[in-house]
Image 1 (cartoon, helix red, strand yellow):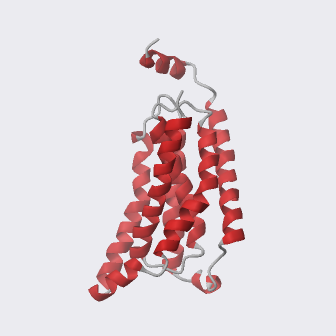
Image 2 (tube, one colour):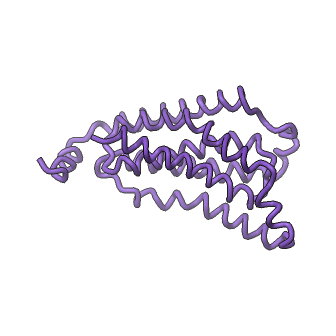
Image 3 (cartoon, helix red, strand yellow):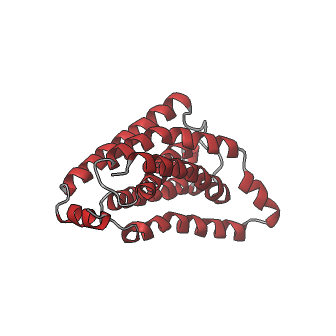
Length: 211
């Protein structure tokens, strides 16, 4: 049987969609719990958390990371099906970067150019690139395990999107600890850390999501 014929057969008689949806929902809950457990055990919130909550710049970090997480989870559900196409949900993945780009543009207009590099580098770049992937390890395991109940046509792509979702969940928790609130910092180092997780997800997906 040819691959295209097998895909057509799976599409005409797929596993119940609610089963994959509910499995992924359970995996997302497990991912949040896993990230939270590591975060509160090993990282914790920033010392001035109570004061930071009153800052729009601080809260905006959560808007970006949560928006990306939701979009990536929806995209993962789509590509987990044999007939799934990233184009159906892929546009939503651009919302978070677009919001971040607008915030960066605003900051560049308000700050003197002598401040740009200092805000971009911040004081937690190395911590960001270390903590987000570590916090994302558990969520990535949960999400990839859930995707095994599907039949993605492109296992690497499905794993990469799971990695984006896991990285965004991890970044949401890390944002509560990070004292760098500048959009220049957030839109430089957070995406790099999430892309590291996405690359790991791609490799894991190619190995474990093939059918």
